[in-house]
Image (cartoon, rainbow, N blue to C red):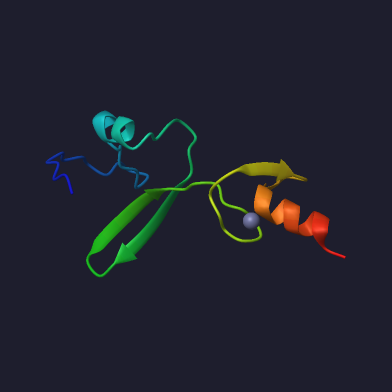
Length: 81
Ligand SMILES: [Zn+2]
């Protein structure tokens, strides 16, 4: 775990800027969705990755009617009789 000593002030709307070097390190880009959680006395911010709407897998996704679905689930659905 990298300890970074970057102080940022919360603005009047409650926003905090994630420092550029951290955004770059984690591949965080403009308009990316971020998931915000709490854990005891900490606030945890994770980049939200697209996941399969059926199984939650993150890999080999394709979009179908506005939903992300993985290739394994598509194959399973195709074989369903
Ligand atoms: Zn799936």
